[in-house]
Length: 209
Ligand code: URA
Image: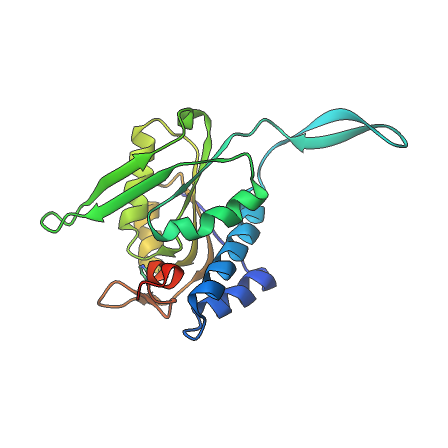
């Protein structure tokens, strides 16, 4: 079974509270989402392996450690996932960024991919899928499946707020994908919004409400 990591660092929790607050405007909301994404990147990369290298400091030779040849891809789910990209890139600047866009077919209710552009060497990369809100989990599970269908093996899912329903759904379909979130909220409401959540993440990021 995959793991769910709830990142309870005080800075993440403090910033998440500001993000949730309805009086926080788009500019501040965007900046805070970037900052939280950066802080989350720190935890998401915690298991990256290290190797020893020989260097010379100004004082003499030293053995020191560097990240061992890890290639990373960051894949935001359009459109709200875009808000977390720059924060992640701050800490993982060599990552390549792919994009996945999905919509729900009104007849079948199944997620359909309308856009997908990935790094050409995607199968060699560890992928971090980002989407601020893990609500029903339908889009996240579908995005994970699209990436697996293209041969990707190592995938992590990062969100700001998860609903228990979304976690269950992703875990049922993808028990190899660990989930990183800053909070697990109470439930989904009848409109599919996370309660108490933060409202519509895309609208708040881009001022489209
Ligand atoms: N998407 C959002 O932006 N907010 C929610 O609460 C659920 C899905």
